[in-house]
Image (cartoon, rainbow, N blue to C red; front, side, top):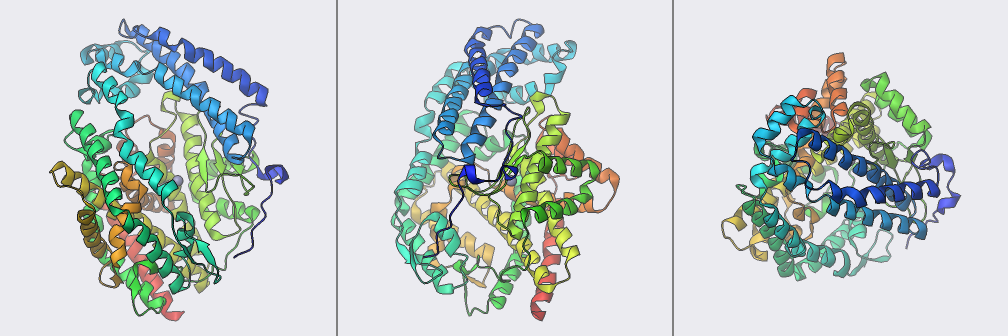
Length: 603
Ligand SMILES: [Zn+2]
């Protein structure tokens, strides 16, 4: 076994490497005072019930009072969750987080009457109020996002009944989570150092990247053997979940589950269709990339378990956190002095929790709300991957910063559809910057491979998932039973289509559908692919050096939820209802694949 790394305790971490949460609340006493105050406000919310339909003035008052309770509650939530994540073993912080969660649940149930009451106001009346009462103007788009759904909202009694059935309707999805996260037991397999290790989802992700073919093959075969054993149960949970989506869509008068899911953010379904068509048209590029992988790895056969091992060896680049900060500022300089000054502010004001400590939440994220800084959690390692993570999370934080400083509270957040675009644009700018800066072939090859693998995993793989997800929803709606055999047969066909003839679609991969939690998310994954492609166009526009294009990008960051996501992106310079941005992304992929092929010949 590898030696066990000794992590510092939270107290042992140098405070300069931790986030400073005192601007949110000076201390626990200040938090408690705020908590009691918000609890009282939430308690009083039901008194607003039955008033909003009386006049436009009453509506404004109700919305103001509602927001006045939600806003400080969000602030409590951000503080409690950041405290919780910095050391999840801390009992005080666990209690803080638990109390805050309960308060938020209370908030939600004390406001459940708002939407049905608003929708009970006739649209003619509401339009007239918006036209004539300037007090409602700031809430116009906010009200539209609710009333646009009017024809899909049932009577309050029917909605209540559905809400009460919620736990039952979500049972399949919950069963999958319990089985997948808690009950499935995986065998002991060989690890990289010649020892043995108990397989788990996390260990699998490491072993599948092993440079030893026999290690990744064994991990692959053993993992899928377990899923294969439970495939009928897993087909039943997935099928049950699909039926829930189809049922909810149909009772809310949507054509199908996809329309219901995409309508929530006003994304035209053509965005989804164009993505699938365009990715299919460009599958030969993926086939070329995997063929190159086979050639560089010098493998007689390329299997599904050979797709994640690094093909360029260890990178020569390493960064301390201080070096990475300087590099990030240089890579993002194209975004202009104003953007950079806020990145600098993030560094100087301790918005970032940098290093790992005992009990700290794994991974990385950006989190904040209207009245807090956009904090960043990292688990820093001195490598290029961490630098990419830093600029990614900084992309989210700058998006939040610009939004909260340019929008009123009601538009001070943004949807997932636009969120990943800001972070991925920063990663794209970093890739461009590194390829320009370093002549060294090995560094070039490493950065190119990082990009190509990212594209493969985000654009191609997530679209494969999206295609599968849509197919099974349609088949269920048409009355086709989603049995394990049926799912596996289609999945294997799809997999062969995506990876082409140079990859052996091992029989185990037919069961991959059984272990992907995202298939329970309801038309979520396509946004990873569209976001990655949109970021490519935006980065090219920023790199052009034309001030107007940079301004358009910054305006997107400033827009928050003041307009529908598709309109926000159009104004930023990318029309996601058309295919041009996808074509541009594939052209970039092809260009870099050519560069990588040329480099590979000389290495
Ligand atoms: Zn992200």
